[in-house]
Image (tube, rainbow, N blue to C red):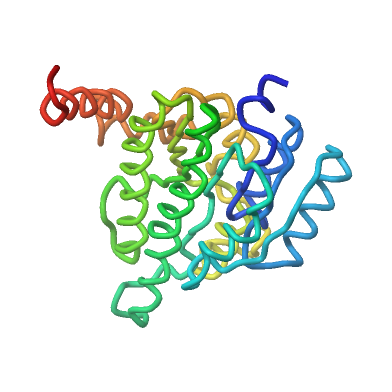
Length: 272
């Protein structure tokens, strides 16, 4: 009940049709939250919703919306106007193309920026304000180790994930004093259906069912994220990623965020 009282009665999970998003939604339902499942594919959402109702008995609602569309935020907020969203989980925005910027129309990159950055900010603004008013709630923003630095064929995707990580840190500093938890959950290579399909398309796997060697398990990533939900701003979601990130951030992202918060308050806030 403590979890439901803090983050309920409804969670909104964007990117809930499969992989980490679907598993996160199922884990939240197991803890007693009603769940809104948001993604593009209605049939996939219906299948996840059926599993949740069968195993958890909570209420579900599905919402098929393309988060790169021009009216995505308005569609989501209007459809959920009657619900109290206590937890926003933004797990949308994987890069299915893995292509150089100039090899695709510029609209491909623009759609990725809209999905991973613009709509994320808009939904955090829409659902974060009521959370602050209630003095409770939470926001989970999924990041990627790709956001540590730029790389070929990942230029736009990596940049959006760098944005997501820094945005989570700043939003954590803004909302924590109001009782709202913010966690940037940064994923490394994780064994999802999307990754399996991409590896097969690139000729790195013999079939789309082949497990990527060394990839983190979805259930482990979800369990780790839930365990650190109130301990933001950043959590590297698997051990290999945590060890590797020390080379990029020897101070640690959480300490960096706290020091930046202190410095900003000291230099920018009015003095009594």
